[in-house]
Structure formats: C-alpha cells, structure tokens
Image (cartoon, rainbow, N blue to C red; front, side, top):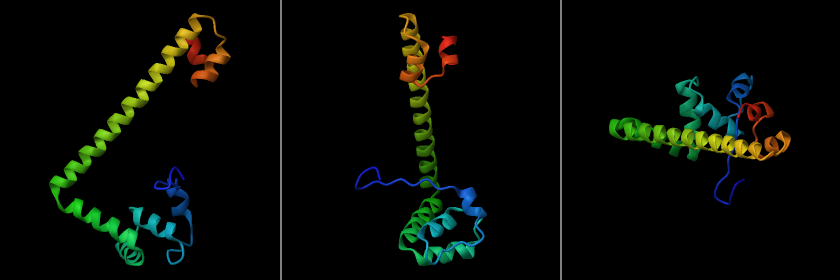
Length: 128
C-alpha cells in the first residue's frame, strides 16, 4: 500500500501459468491474471469479464482504444514516451552516482564507504 488511493501488486505470470487449478470463481487475482494472459482462450476471457465488473471496465476501455486507430497510436506513443523518460531518468541517476563516487574517491573517501553511499560496486568505483 503506497497511499490510501494507490496500491501496487507484483505478480508472477510464470508461476500463475504453471498452476494446475486456477480458481477464477473465488479468486479475483486469478480472474485478472487470466484476463492479462495472452494465452487465455477467448471463452475464458469472456467468462472472467462477465464475473468481474472491474475487469469488464478494463475490457471496455481496451476495446475502445483498440477500435480507434488514432487513439491506439496515441496510447502507444504515450507508452513509448513514458518508457523513454524512465530510461533517461535511470541513466541520469547512474551518471550522477558515478560522478559523486568519482569526487569522493578524489578526496580519499574509502571505497567501502563510497559503495555504501552510492550503491556502486567497489569494482565500478575503482574504474573511475
């Protein structure tokens, strides 16, 4: 739980697919996983959509976006932009860590302390 309005769950699709018995009747997570699974049969997807109003709303939104080529393209472009932004931020953070480590190394801070403070390995720091 991140806030009162936001909760994040991490699920393992590989483990879900390996389950012999999926309980879509009693387990809402199994319904969602079945809906997300690209290998689920169309009949199973229809069944879980009928069983769960939240999944039904998600399906309606997906159908809407998929039906409109322009909306689908806009969605894809937004996803690409978010991915590019995240990559850029991660790259900038990594470069900042290296710069800080380089500066700390230059003033004689022990490698172990630099590693603990920056998250870089001692080997990475030695290369700076």
